[in-house]
Image (cartoon, rainbow, N blue to C red; front, side, top):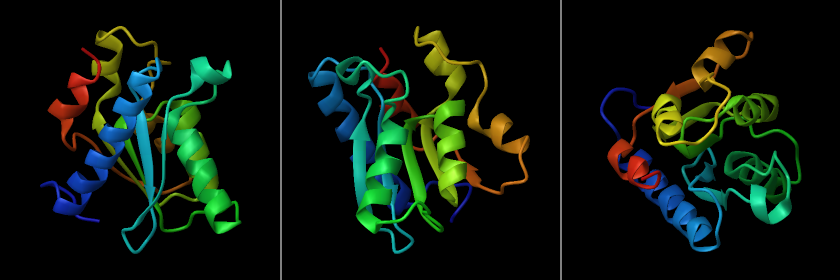
Length: 153
């Protein structure tokens, strides 16, 4: 993956996650969206938060997108795949990504900004969580950050 300057591919993926988050907002859900891209770059699943709709504290967009991608492949492992999220994944989502073998996480808004906007987090970003494990995941933050932050205002 390209680090530093955002690639056109990462921006396209993030626009998909943003559009998915907006669909969730239209359905009364919190403003989080996620997508999974296969190693070839094709988006194979999208999801928005469904915590309220499912009455499930774990129905985060990232978790639902990972579950959908696993069903798409008929496997529990997503080796080489990328998780794209409108906000930095929380510990639940980061742990799910790590367990599934996600290779890369691309996110828009940082968890501190999500907190400032009034959304509860566990005050721990995905970088800090992954750093506590032997797992190696490339993490790129701030992709289309201003567009992602607008979801939370």
